[in-house]
Length: 225
Image (cartoon, rainbow, N blue to C red; front, side, top):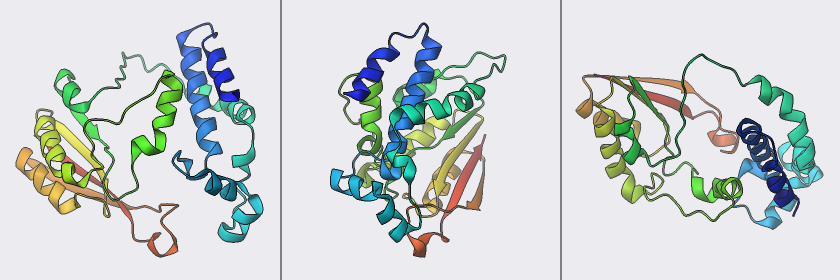
């Protein structure tokens, strides 16, 4: 009921920029209230992880921010979020479209790709679909093209990189533990680009457990035509 009230009041703001900022702040507030920032966790687990004493005992963190109000999260970040808005003197466009229907319509020298990957807990619709439903005020359905489905991923990446090869540069973000493996993706790049390079950097994922914290790397595969 509280979230519904905020959503209704956002529509009363005086212009589209204020509405966009308010929705962004509400999205952050909702994410901060949820353990692991995901919306497919059982309510019993949510209550357990919001228990600050339990959290400290098991994880040495009290996670007090889970128990702060939506209002406090919203108000605490207004100034910082407003300061992040600037005019770069250019025309900028954002789309919320299927990549395969959009990519040929975009005139760009470089395309940066950061899809979710099978095997890396990136079930985007399960995790974050509620946020889209909150912002759009209607039920949503999962994407037709699911990069998180291992049975579809290879075919989708082949299609994506073939379309991306029409740009001068393509940069793909992945990880050393993701699927398809870096070696497979690199080979796909080599089939579509004249020059291919790979860069990697050590990265610590917070929810992978102690054993796996130090073995993860973020990887960029760069193709040039």
